[in-house]
Length: 395
Image (cartoon, rainbow, N blue to C red; front, side, top):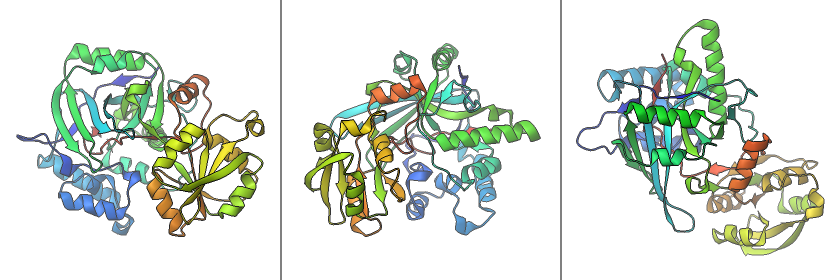
């Protein structure tokens, strides 16, 4: 089972207020350079200046990130804990059903294990990424700047995290989610949390590529010498239970026309009109047990699976679509949010889209139990953790 250890965290220095909203950002891979500029304008010490190097800054951009981080540490903008600690991370938000919810997890350092070795498990296949951006950034800064998101199979982990600790940072993001970070310093509680997470496998929910980069970086350090802390990587771990998860779907955008898609899907799905597509469409899909094709004019077509056509195929929307389109030449992109999908298809950037349903907790647990991988981009865990709440130095 994987080691899970506290670490001496890097955090933004706070005075009378623990609010660091203007220093934080969404994860680097869910926004573009325009949004990066907006974050940077919020504060001259916003984390994007380190975590989101832009290509226009040239080949020295990763060294610039490292230099900025060193400057902020030297001038006291960022400070380091005096001893190894865990960070309890709470998010309070309103879900799609209008309910107020709070989820809780813990940030620590999770062991970097070899692929297939067990202990830390992937839950979906990843798409190839040619760029080495995160690896180059890790090499330059010698830091974990944002956490991987893991799901623990240990029952009772949440109970060990509920009690409050010392609040060291909080922020409210652009979606209205309130994030609170609490430092755990009590040795007995640290040992208890470490034992619970290490007792069972951890399933990677978000951050497969960053975990793979951590493995590559660890192997480089083993060969060339360097930070011994590379044997672990910063990870947020929450318990794999319904009340701690909010899972959205990642929808599919295609470069082929609605007519071509419907022809290819006809042997596998029954079709019916969905009218004008909007946020309400997802709940209707849930009740009908179907998918929905989105045309450029914003109209939809429900796609109800023909169960006999999917013998031997995993009962996931993403798996079934992948199977149904396996002989059709196409390219696919991914987008969460119905409104954004409709906008992109209507802009003629894509030929059509297909909305899929969120993956259930039962399927996520089945993945952990069987080791079977979902297709790429099957799940979108929300809300997103804020970058900048805590960082981990590698020495």
